[in-house]
Image (cartoon, rainbow, N blue to C red; front, side):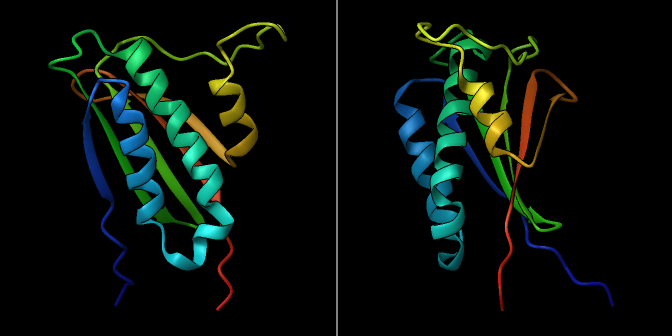
Length: 137
Protein backbone atom coordinates (compact mmCIF):
# COMPACT_ATOMS: atom_id res chain seq x y z
CA UNK A 1 0.00 0.00 0.00
CA UNK A 2 1.42 3.45 -0.88
CA UNK A 3 2.20 5.95 1.84
CA UNK A 4 -0.59 8.51 2.07
CA UNK A 5 0.83 12.04 1.82
CA UNK A 6 -0.03 14.83 4.20
CA UNK A 7 -2.90 17.05 3.16
CA UNK A 8 -1.60 20.48 2.09
CA UNK A 9 -2.40 23.36 4.41
CA UNK A 10 -4.38 26.14 2.73
CA UNK A 11 -5.05 29.75 3.76
CA UNK A 12 -6.82 32.72 2.20
CA UNK A 13 -6.05 36.28 3.23
CA UNK A 14 -7.44 39.62 2.05
CA UNK A 15 -5.15 41.45 -0.37
CA UNK A 16 -4.25 43.93 2.35
CA UNK A 17 -0.84 44.80 3.84
CA UNK A 18 -2.00 43.60 7.28
CA UNK A 19 -2.22 40.10 5.81
CA UNK A 20 1.56 39.84 5.37
CA UNK A 21 2.23 39.36 9.08
CA UNK A 22 -0.77 37.06 9.51
CA UNK A 23 0.40 34.88 6.62
CA UNK A 24 3.99 34.79 7.88
CA UNK A 25 2.83 33.71 11.33
CA UNK A 26 0.39 31.09 10.03
CA UNK A 27 2.96 29.46 7.76
CA UNK A 28 5.73 29.43 10.37
CA UNK A 29 3.44 28.00 13.06
CA UNK A 30 2.34 25.19 10.76
CA UNK A 31 5.87 23.77 10.47
CA UNK A 32 6.60 20.77 12.68
CA UNK A 33 8.49 21.92 15.79
CA UNK A 34 11.57 19.89 14.84
CA UNK A 35 11.89 21.79 11.52
CA UNK A 36 11.31 25.32 12.83
CA UNK A 37 14.98 25.93 13.74
CA UNK A 38 16.07 24.81 10.25
CA UNK A 39 13.36 26.27 8.01
CA UNK A 40 11.44 28.79 10.12
CA UNK A 41 13.41 31.96 9.32
CA UNK A 42 13.71 31.26 5.59
CA UNK A 43 10.07 30.26 5.31
CA UNK A 44 8.93 33.40 7.14
CA UNK A 45 11.06 35.57 4.86
CA UNK A 46 9.80 33.87 1.70
CA UNK A 47 6.21 34.17 2.88
CA UNK A 48 6.63 37.88 3.59
CA UNK A 49 8.20 38.59 0.23
CA UNK A 50 5.76 36.53 -1.84
CA UNK A 51 2.64 37.77 -0.07
CA UNK A 52 3.85 41.37 -0.31
CA UNK A 53 4.46 40.94 -4.05
CA UNK A 54 1.05 39.31 -4.52
CA UNK A 55 -0.67 42.21 -2.77
CA UNK A 56 1.32 44.91 -4.60
CA UNK A 57 1.35 43.44 -8.08
CA UNK A 58 -1.33 40.78 -8.29
CA UNK A 59 -4.43 42.24 -6.73
CA UNK A 60 -6.71 44.99 -7.91
CA UNK A 61 -9.46 45.30 -5.34
CA UNK A 62 -8.19 45.23 -1.76
CA UNK A 63 -11.72 44.68 -0.44
CA UNK A 64 -12.49 41.72 -2.71
CA UNK A 65 -9.28 40.02 -3.84
CA UNK A 66 -7.78 37.17 -1.87
CA UNK A 67 -4.21 35.96 -1.68
CA UNK A 68 -4.01 32.18 -1.32
CA UNK A 69 -1.21 30.20 0.29
CA UNK A 70 -0.63 26.47 0.21
CA UNK A 71 2.10 24.70 2.18
CA UNK A 72 2.97 21.02 1.85
CA UNK A 73 5.92 18.66 2.34
CA UNK A 74 7.04 16.48 -0.57
CA UNK A 75 10.27 14.93 -1.76
CA UNK A 76 12.45 16.36 1.01
CA UNK A 77 11.12 19.91 0.59
CA UNK A 78 8.53 22.16 2.10
CA UNK A 79 6.70 23.74 -0.83
CA UNK A 80 4.99 27.11 -0.56
CA UNK A 81 2.64 28.39 -3.27
CA UNK A 82 1.40 31.97 -3.09
CA UNK A 83 -1.36 32.79 -5.56
CA UNK A 84 -3.07 36.01 -6.55
CA UNK A 85 -5.71 36.94 -9.13
CA UNK A 86 -3.29 38.99 -11.27
CA UNK A 87 -2.30 37.95 -14.76
CA UNK A 88 1.22 39.41 -14.70
CA UNK A 89 4.23 37.13 -14.47
CA UNK A 90 6.85 38.06 -11.87
CA UNK A 91 10.32 38.49 -13.34
CA UNK A 92 13.63 38.16 -11.53
CA UNK A 93 15.40 41.54 -11.69
CA UNK A 94 18.62 42.80 -10.16
CA UNK A 95 17.89 46.23 -8.68
CA UNK A 96 20.55 48.86 -8.07
CA UNK A 97 22.03 48.93 -4.58
CA UNK A 98 20.15 52.14 -3.77
CA UNK A 99 16.76 50.86 -4.98
CA UNK A 100 14.08 50.69 -2.29
CA UNK A 101 12.15 47.78 -3.85
CA UNK A 102 12.63 44.86 -6.18
CA UNK A 103 14.54 42.37 -4.06
CA UNK A 104 11.74 39.89 -3.32
CA UNK A 105 12.49 37.50 -6.17
CA UNK A 106 16.24 37.91 -5.63
CA UNK A 107 15.76 36.63 -2.07
CA UNK A 108 13.50 33.88 -3.34
CA UNK A 109 16.11 32.82 -5.88
CA UNK A 110 18.83 32.64 -3.22
CA UNK A 111 16.81 30.86 -0.52
CA UNK A 112 14.71 28.38 -2.47
CA UNK A 113 16.07 25.11 -3.76
CA UNK A 114 13.70 25.49 -6.72
CA UNK A 115 10.97 27.93 -7.72
CA UNK A 116 8.69 28.71 -10.61
CA UNK A 117 5.79 30.88 -11.70
CA UNK A 118 2.66 29.13 -12.95
CA UNK A 119 -0.62 30.42 -14.34
CA UNK A 120 -3.65 29.30 -12.36
CA UNK A 121 -6.30 27.20 -14.14
CA UNK A 122 -9.01 29.85 -13.83
CA UNK A 123 -7.51 33.27 -13.20
CA UNK A 124 -4.26 34.48 -11.71
CA UNK A 125 -0.71 33.45 -11.03
CA UNK A 126 1.07 31.25 -8.48
CA UNK A 127 4.68 31.46 -7.36
CA UNK A 128 5.81 28.08 -6.05
CA UNK A 129 9.04 27.68 -4.05
CA UNK A 130 10.64 24.74 -2.29
CA UNK A 131 12.92 24.78 0.74
CA UNK A 132 14.96 21.65 1.27
CA UNK A 133 14.91 19.93 4.64
CA UNK A 134 16.64 16.90 6.03
CA UNK A 135 14.97 15.56 9.11
CA UNK A 136 17.10 13.11 11.02
CA UNK A 137 15.13 10.47 12.66
